Length: 164
Image 1: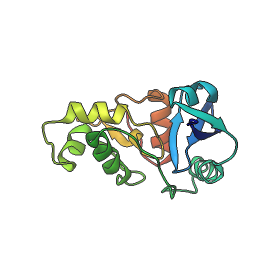
Image 2: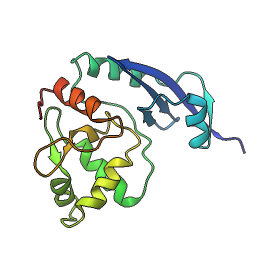
Image 3: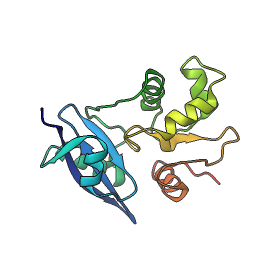
Image 4: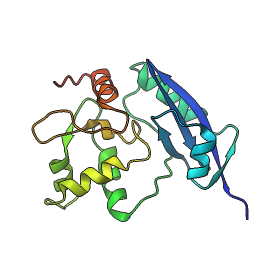
């Protein structure tokens, strides 16, 4: 049985370069670290194929240009039941708004699980589309983001959110 195909494309936003990877089911990964598509495909235990990301790339360009506030893409999210619950709630955080880890824990019915929520947010395989950049610390400050706080600050500013 051959490995599942994944489709890879690069997207650029200012000084940042991302790799978008999709399966036949939907967007599976956005890498914020500049890893090669071949390495990413290997980590996903998949084989690299051509094409398949046209809509995702177009919608990301629209978002980075300020013309898109919500993504309309099939997603291929894979994780634990807890992670999936957190990511599903993240999808409901509106453009231009933020939520704290504690508030997110309350939203999923686990009020004492802010740290576990933080771990699930940190494991989000599809940043930007699943908007983990909208999660802030309990005091309203910027905290962790896989792409770095400069990128998080810039994404929030793009959405009209200015934090110190």
